[in-house]
Image (cartoon, rainbow, N blue to C red; front, side, top):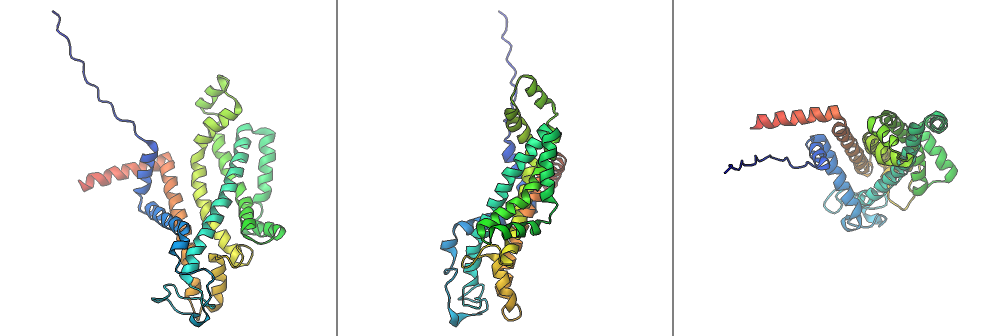
Length: 308
């Protein structure tokens, strides 16, 4: 009888989840981890603001006006006796809402413009990008103020103004990325087998052009929060009685020498949120950039060997 040869066992490596690997690599960076933690805390505060705020944003107590930080009022009170901590907590939702909605609108509009301009080129590219250049020619805040001057002050109009301001940024980033993707082998192969333009755009081009857009989104969120605060500071953004960090800064500037806490705590909230978005954006850039990602992975392996 012929002996049966044993079948050699082949070890199969389990499939790695690219998203989880990227997330682990992102959170392995201390600055990115700090930004993610701060952002999660701010989001939770915005979602649970009614439960976390010690009192209402506009609860007036003239007897306790201009009280310094203490046991009764952790962040002190303003010139009307309103609790600063409550107003900072309740203002988190406004800042996040304006930032997310404004950047979301500019992201959708800018990506569509950049996608079609970069993919089709020629006169489509010329018409669309010249329109973006007109918007890009104005300083960001000047353009936002001009839009609000037409539409009128308010939170909704501030969102629209900020969205118009940042649409050209996303259009340029997307177009630049699409130009490098549209002539790749897999796009030409899909075109050769009869794939439609829409399928090419949204199935092949957009996913591969997305990394720079994702990084730009994080950076734009930081600038949108600053823009909302600046517009509210000059009275063009969120209007009373809604709490806004920028408006709190404007109200507190008159009492900087007498009651520093009125302006300092909302200012710190703005700084922390903007810093969180920027640090997270830097971390995303390092993870999504192939060269930076390789350097991070090499550094992580070296650190692991040293620990062992």
